[in-house]
View 1 (cartoon, rainbow, N blue to C red):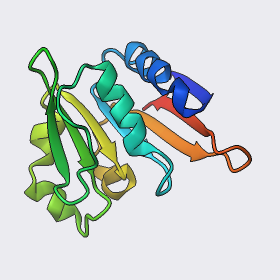
View 2 (tube, rainbow, N blue to C red):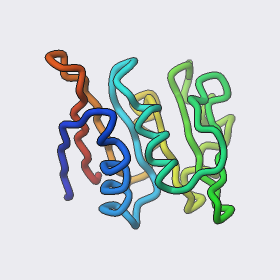
View 3 (cartoon, rainbow, N blue to C red):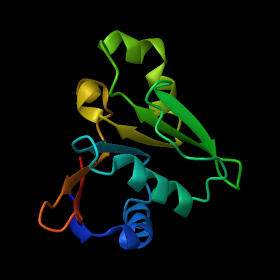
Length: 142
């Protein structure tokens, strides 16, 4: 099991995004955990930038899922399950079609659908360091 921990500031996000995608190059499901305002969407933006997404990356809070396209015309799916009220809603959007598509899936508020996550995924925990406002990012392959 790979396990990486980073203590970062915003200016380091691009290099950490690259390192994580390169380290987990065979993985496609990335589950993000962290409190409101911890920086999940900001970090996903940095990863999408590294993957050369051409669309504007924003949190799909109301849509639940956004689809982005890279400059190679590959699809990337970005989920935000914050407003999910029941697991049935995840089934209603056809989560399996996305999770098992072979495309990158970046999932915010993963704890709301923990039982639906595939057997193999990368867990990314983001924690705010109160002393200086930086973040700790802990990555672990499940």
